[in-house]
Image 1 (cartoon, rainbow, N blue to C red):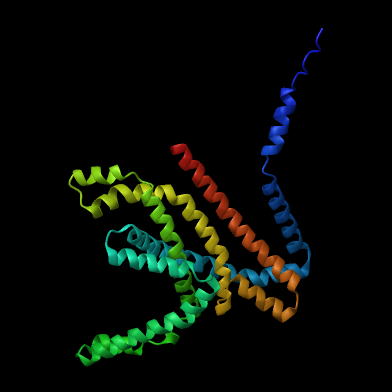
Image 2: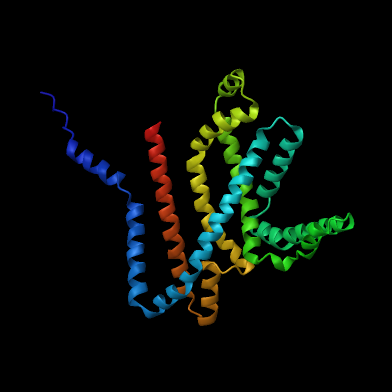
Length: 284
């Protein structure tokens, strides 16, 4: 008689699959949070560092939210320009995207905050002088008096992040719009809608829905990249941690604390993005 083939243990196979599918990475992060909570509570040095650095959390969140709101507007306009058949707007949007994507973000923050914004202020002042010369002093006087000191480094940081991320969001919006079938635009135009009405009521709502997960991931990335504005002396958690480390020489406490803070914020945001993705997939 031929030996019978060994029987597969279905329970063992299910057990292995269950172990393989466990989110071990998430359990590891939970352990990091537990360890961090313990040292922040039990060790005086870490508790002092946490109390000092947490003051910058509000600045980090505020800077990220405002910057992303403006970046969404810039990105949408540039994305529409990228698909426009108008030569001027198409090339202008392409120039903006390629310039921003071709320069390191740290260099862009320096350039926009310390070169671009002052140049803009000079332009506003020149416009104010022109208004005054043609007899519109009520407009020219405030514009002429507008100076670089009127724009704080926080404001410049927001401008820099908005302009930088607007270019990346432009490509997301462009891809989302181009993912919609052309037949929908043609059908809307055949019903008497103008191009703008069809884009606003038919194409954009679907495109934005398709790219929501990508937009959420970019916001998480902006929260992390907002740490770069500390080079402008913006008192976010990165800058505050540098000040604490420089004044106390407790580098370990300072940078472990700020790392755990960023990890907490980004993990929570990433989980929200995953929940949004699951809901969208269920609706599909």
